[in-house]
Length: 309
Length: 309
Image 1 (cartoon, one colour):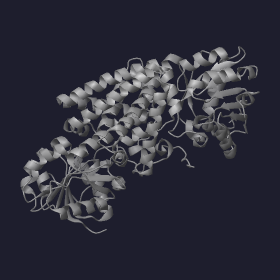
Image 2: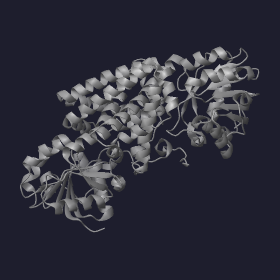
Image 3: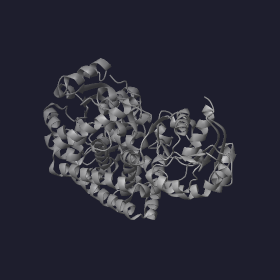
Image 4: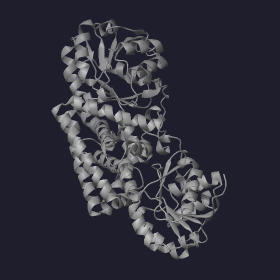
């Protein structure tokens, strides 16, 4: 793999940034990688584990001479970080981000950037329930999608370059406009996360069932929700506050549909339930055929893989 | 491991029964295992893969001389199966089941059984999203819980024996009364399944987001829901129809809580969201500490395991 950027700056050193760093090293995509995290503990830990070639003590130091700057901070602080680094950007620098929401990030970041810089918002659809500098690994983006928003940047060559960079990290890249991105992610990510958080909260709160019962007997389905509901609270707070409309729209549809199923249970409409559950099975098959999940039973948690006929 | 029953009959030959069979063979728990499935295809397939020592062409043949009869059929047909086999049970036979609902099964099965037989309803909290005779494997019950309802049987020695049998299959056994079982499972299993089915149904139905987008970009959280929503439709229809009250109670609480979170999003109450998401994280930690799930990121779908500090 050939070097794509001479100097890359990672602002924020959590799961996403650290996986990008190890991925860049794996593929030789960058000459030098600088990094910055707001917390002193995170910077210290990054230095201990060799995360970034240089860990800087300020964001402005980190972005100095960087050809690519990646904002890997919660969506709610993207604007403030952009304002801070803007005067220190190299002439013609490319700025990208990894936020789960795109319209709000563009709204918050764009006004601060100098005309000579090029902003290409991005969103790698990858992650785990772990967070922090230790959570990253080079393989995180392999065969995952990375969505880029191309219409803030007037230089197609830079969009091509960033596309090759993400492909070098293992990802498949697609372009999408910001509003559609926020709706698609509302369905595939934001609403499911809120629903998982809610279900885990209800379980924690139900007086007649103890927490220890919920924990002991979680294998029956609940534990899949708890994995999602263990994701970083700050990141997710910012996602919901910044993708308000799409999230609320989908939750509205969800509630309507849930009421219809509750009604079928109450009235004993077994055919409706059976038809519904048969239809949802087909979506699962599509995801497995698209290579976006394993067919190993129970996510391969330890069960024997099944040979399919 | 010593033999616990001379002859065991499995009625229904899906994931749960086939895993019991392979588990019995692994530990030598039964002298001979007979099996029956209603579908001729399933019986044929069972014979091909050596599932059961003898596959019978009727349930009445299968239960003949059995010391333990295990009903592994959907909850909705437990009563009909019990009525069919009752006159053919061996004197003093123990009947158990593996249904996900207990009060309705007791209501449906008990009236048919002869006085000389002993009914000990059971529920192993284990499974995968796969179903059918090929889906089973010996390890399914290892370190999982099996709940037994002891109050239908007046012979404590038989409860001890069935407990040892499940322990021989690898499970941890606990006793619980039927109503409490149905509430606990409503929280840890039934409500999460209905919610997952609903979310997958909404995604399938949203006009402005295509199915292929939902499938491609599912890695962001949605795919965990689709795994749950791929479970057997007949089994789950029967679960909801037979655990109506507890499921509807929990869904009521869930909706209430979801509305509170939606309101926090709408009004921009970030502190409420952050506090909520922080609280749900603790439940996840409890589940991992209790050995009921892996701490490997993303369920170990291919990511590097994380060393925890």
